[in-house]
Image 1 (tube, helix red, strand yellow):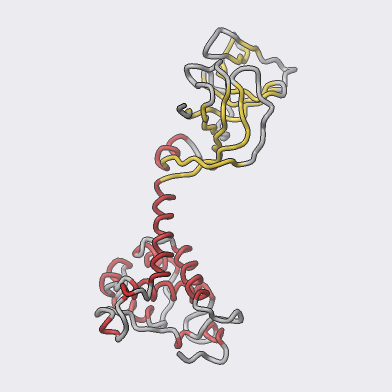
Image 2: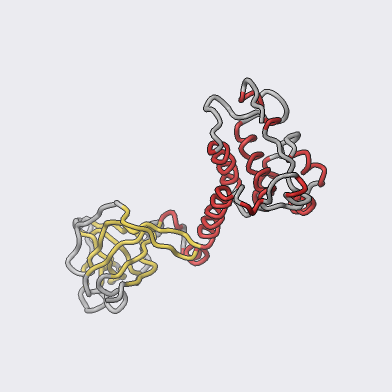
Length: 279
């Protein structure tokens, strides 16, 4: 292929105005060819004419933002991932840093009638192995993120007995919860998980359990279990209404602490789920 003297000249001619235009177009052309996509089916899914799709693939038209996202949906990718895919694929081809190749040097007719009809090897013969791998990884991530939501497991711990001073924010790992379930409980952005130790909240929460905390729910609701700070120590306890005063209660016994105005007390969040490792 012949390269133009100025690789970035595609920004000054034709419909391409930004690098994002070029990256999206490159991904669209390569995905269409790799998967031997039927032009009519693609047009029907996006909601435009087959002729318009043909112009887009030939580099003569740049679709609006809404249509770009429809193209990405056809290939089961997020639009942002599709743009990144085009950029990564161009970079892997070794184009110089000062610009991208002119579009006339890149256009390759998609194999609407089959790869052989375009006079090149079939896509399954290794030509697209790297691209297939990238697309497979992106689709797997899309599916995983759509089905599951990751919540950080923090270094902080809470005591269900004598109190804990460990309040670290460092993330040790991530726990995956079904997105539908966790969103029914609250906003995952305000949730975190910690380890709880002690036996004063048994059988509700066992020693060594992982507890999911919703830090967006800090208001007092009687008889709910909370992660809280009390006089410099971190606890997981049940909060109760004790004759008009706030009480900190344990589930395993009748111990009750009454919170006074002089106490250092703060509700960090409500405990909404718990699990423990098996020996």
